Each structure stands twice: as C-alpha cells, then as structure tokens.
Length: 386
Image (tube, rainbow, N blue to C red; front, side, top):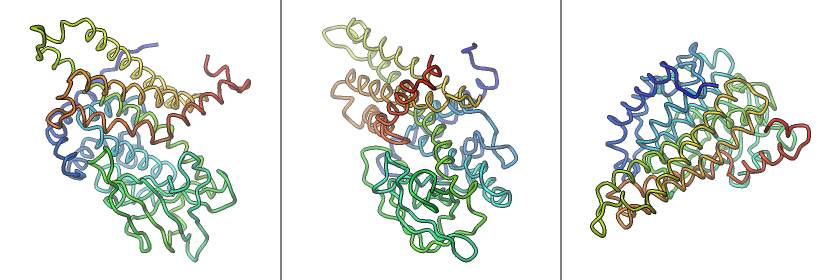
C-alpha cells in the first residue's frame, strides 16, 4: 500500500497546477461575476489532454486511470471549482461515448470530444425524476431509421452551449431496466433549451432545461444495447461522484490556503490571528479533514480503477465525505476572514457558493448514505466494507 504519487502523477499534477495558476485563477472571479462559460479555456485544457483524461487513447484520450484524473481535477478546482466541475462532467460524458458508442460514431465524435473541439452534456435528471432517476419519463420510441425522443430534462450542465448530449430515455417498461442511452447532437431538430438558471454558484457554466419534441436519433447513436442505459448511467456516476468530490477538495484546499495567509496578515488585539490557539485548532481540524477526504477519494478511485466489486459503495462514501468536508472547510475559512470573507473582494464566498451544490448533484449525500447503508445491512455484502 503506497500512498505516494508516482513520477508520472507528479508530472500531471505540475502541468495541471501551472495551467490552473496561469490561465484559470486570474479569470475565475470575472467568469463568476459575469456568468462567462470559458470555452476558449476549455479548449486549451483539451490541448493538454484534460478533456479526455480517462477516455481511450484510440479516440485521442490520455487513457489514464481515475486516480490520475483526481490529481489533475484537484489542481484545476483549486483555481475554479465551477469550471472544473463542468470539465469533469464533460470527461464523464466523453468516456461514456468512447466506451459504449458504435465504432463509427465513436470515431466521429471521440476525437472531437477528447480534444475539447466539441463539448458534451449529461442528460439524466428530469423535473420529476431527481434522486429517483429510474422513474424518468423521457420516451424513446422506434422510428424509421432510428429512434424518436420526447420529454424534458432539468438542471443540465452546459446545456445550450455544448455540442453533444448523452441522454437517458425510456425505451421499455417501468423502472431501471426500461432505460436506454443515446448520443444526440445538440443541434438536432426538435431540441429546445430553457433559460440559463439563476443559481447560487457555478456561474461559469450554464444550467438549462432541455426539451425533446419529436427528436429523431439515428439507430447507430444508441449507446450500448437497448435498455442498458441505466447501467451505463450508473457506471458513469461512479466516476462522476469521485470527480465532484475532488472538486470539493480543490475548493477546500484553496480556502484553507487563503485562511492560512490571512491569519499571518491580520492583526487583532495586537496579535496576528495565527497566534490565537482557538484559530490554530480550527485550521488543524480543517487540514486534517482535507487530508481524510482526499485519501477517501483516492481510495475510491483505486477501487474503481481496479474493478473492485465494492467500488460503487466506496465512490458513494467518498462523495458524501469529501463534499460535506469541502463545504465545511470553505465555511470555516470564510469565518476566519470575518466580514471580509463575505465580500467579493475575497474569493471565500465564491468557494463556498460553488462547493455547496456538490452535496446535491451526482446523487444527493442522503442518497449516498442510502447506498452505503444498504451494503452494510445486507449480510451478503456487509463484508465488503471491512
């Protein structure tokens, strides 16, 4: 059991950190304030391979593992968690296309997606199907030459600004076994996008509803086999949960570093804040929770890379622990800054706003606890946690 990074991993880490500090960090506050979706920066990230980190090399990806991806995403999220969170969603959707699309379709879309020339959105959530994703109602019916999609999706990251949609729709009966997955070009006739949602955070990526009305999808754009969509969606979300957990770690790390600097700068009662034991203990707890969360995420990534039978439950544990800890650390760091932390002049309020949604998406943290508790209480799987 080796907790040290390899030389290759350290190299990826350095490259990501240099890119984040030089390209993302100087613009993150402006993207947030003006609601800018920085496609040009995402394209630059694509040139470094960051748009297809764990997609196959055959389609232009780097073919890395999920552990390697967490190292890169943490560095990027420390500069801008909102933009990085979209990048992780794009990576997830891209991997799903390169993993399950027909060879001809993957060859057409894969290189564009892994390079960042084209961007993707993941369409699972619906107005009436959030945590209960298996109850989704978007319909896929057979049509001449393929499929016809009808229905609506909600809270879709990047929607209206991306080129490809990975869509889950019901082609069979009720429940998870009736769902199929499709790759749908975003400019297909019959697709309309709602307004850009006015959100608490994540201002550097648009979030819209997507409506499908008589949208015809070619037969070869089915991902995997018919009615395999929910399994594909859940496979994607295992990695997605690690990804969003890593975004929380990056934001928390940046918040802790900001608090550390501020404690050495700020004087009250003729002493630097760093000399007050109460605050010393606070940052000690913040640092410890950060390391615990990071190691939990990396353990889950190793499980996923190795195809461990208990990978799903570890991904759920990591997502819940890291996103809860990440938000708490950002909140404590803001508290250390006092009134200044509440001002946009400092980045703390942005870290806090961007980190909050991580406890909701890719499965709420309540659902993560449901996943874990089921495994613990089931006698046939309880030993997986030991």
